[in-house]
Length: 244
Image (cartoon, rainbow, N blue to C red; front, side, top):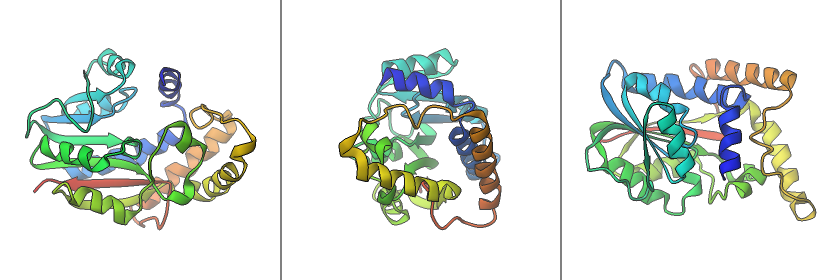
C-alpha cells in the first residue's frame, strides 16, 4: 500500500487521469459552494493529501485516512491530518460544512455506514462530494489490486446518499472519452487474468509523454463539453448531495 501511495503522489501532478479529475471536480465543488468561504472541510480517505490544497481555498481543510503514511502526507502539506475510519469518524456531529470522499467508498464493505457518518458530521445545509467507480462492466485488474467491492450506477449512487438523509443535487458520469478504451482493456484483463500475473502499479504509472499529452487533451476537452452536455456513460460518477 505504501508503494502505491508513493507512486500516486508522484503521478498526481502529471498523469492524465488526475488532470482530468481536477478539471471535472473542482468547478463542480465551486458551483455547489457558491460564494461561501471560511468553511470547515473534511476529506475522508485523503491519501496523498493533494486535494487538501484546493479544498483549503474555501476554509480550513482536514484530511483523514486509515493509512498513517497518508496522514503524514496531509500534515506535511500543511493541513490537518487525522487517522481514522470513515465508518466511525472521530468528529462530533455538525462539525463540518463540506465532506468529500474521492474514489474510496468502492473499497468499503459498509459504504452506507460511511455516507451516514459523513452526513452526521455535516451542519444543516452542508455538502457531500463523492467520486465513485462506475459500472461493473468496467471491472478489471485495478479493482482487484485496490480490493474494490463494487462499482456504482447513477441509481445506486442516488440511493446511497438518500439512505443517509442527503438530497442528491448532481449525479453525473466522468471520463466518457476513456470508456471505450477501458471497456476493451478491462474485458481482456478479466478474460486473461488466470494466465498472468497482476501488474499492481500499471494504472498509477504515468504513460509515455506523447500518450499522456493526448489523453490529457481528450479528457480536458470532455470536461469542457460536459458542462453543457451530460455524458451518457463513463468510468467515474461524481455525486454532490446536500444535508437538509
